[in-house]
Image (spheres, rainbow, N blue to C red):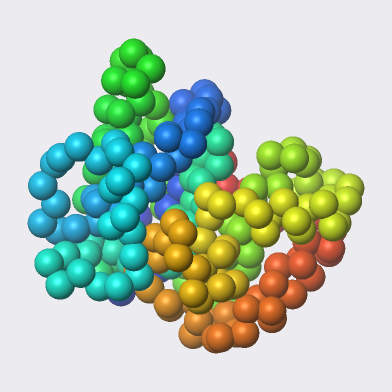
Length: 229
C-alpha cells in the first residue's frame, strides 16, 4: 500500500521502472505511445479510445483545450529505456492516483498486446515522493534532465562523466524529456508540459542560465545522493 497522501496543488516526483529492470521502451513507437498516454489520460472526462497512432501526437500542446479538465499539471518529465520520471502537481482531488493508474494500466495493455506478453510490465505501482521545498525541486529537475546520461555512461552518477562535451551534446539532443521546453519556450515538437511553474523557480525566461545550472552540476563530480530505485 502506498503510504503517501496526495494533496491538491502540491508537487510530487512520480517514477517507476520495468519489472526486473527490463526495458519499458523498445523502439520509438513505444515512447510515442507512452507520451500519448500521458497526454490523453490527463483528462477527468477521458473516454477510452485507440491512442496508438502517431497522429495522436498532434494533440500535444501547451495551449489549454477548453474541453479538457486536467487531473494534474505536468511540470517536468523524462523517459528512459527502462524507467520514467515525472514531476506533477495535483489539480483535482485524487488526480495523481487516477492519472498514474491510467498510465500504468494503459501502457501495460499496449505492451502485452504488441509483444504478445501477459502479466505485469512495471515494478509494482508507481512510486511517489513529495517535493517539499524549492531547492529540492530545482535539483530534481536537474537530476531528471541529466538522467539520460545513463545510456552512454552507466556509472556517471558514481564516477562522474568521462567526456564533458560529449555528455552535454547527448543531453541536448535527447528528445524524450522536457529539457527542450525548458531551454526553448517556442519548442513545438513533443511538448507535454501543462504548466510553466518551473519558471517561478528556474531563472524565468533565461534558458542559458538554466543550461549553466545543469552543466555546473554535471561538472561537479558524483551524484550519489540522488538514487530513487
